[in-house]
Length: 120
Image (tube, rainbow, N blue to C red; front, side, top):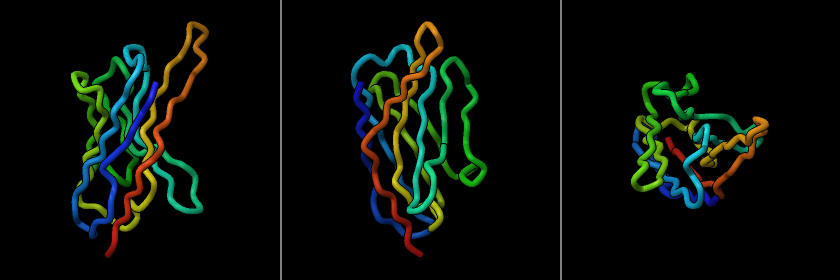
């Protein structure tokens, strides 16, 4: 399984940006896919998630109403549409997928990360 992100960059506050994550390999049995981010000196945090078998999308409070996560199964691509960006959104964004085996043990897959920098 490989996850390759793209779409990061330098934008101004209030701008929009869309991140993409192309997933290759066996993708049919992921139980979770999502976007995380890590700012300098801070822990990696979940930004948005897509649990499999659920229509409920997860968002951290600080991005609700501004970010939208989606998955195109035809293209095997996970997206994160980010609107009304703030300086506090500046971070390296990582694509993530999780698979659990028959014993419910998780295996995590990560992309290489893409930098998002929001200037004022």
